[in-house]
Length: 149
Image (cartoon, rainbow, N blue to C red; front, top):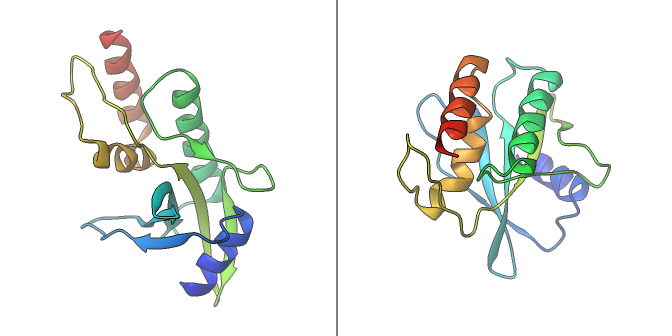
């Protein structure tokens, strides 16, 4: 994991940042790190943990999160790498993983007819969770959001 974090550090220009792992959960598909600089949480780094999805799968998901953010949905936006990519491929120790970086949600609330306010710490993980949703669930989510407007 050290080599992957070193490469992510370079790809996203995260020099001087501290990577703190977030505990996994049952059925979790990714390894998640909170990225802090000068004691301030700034980003969430998502590293694919299992090899059942392609770069295009991850790209489609991050493009959807980008779409949501650009259209006013309260999600943590995707941060492009220094090369302008939403998803980076890293090879280390014989493993291939896909990496994406997200803004850390500092102050947001989520109001819809279907959801109550979500605590601030949950919002960034909520955005990352969106990435694992099926297309059907994403359509339902978008419809619920449009009903609340």
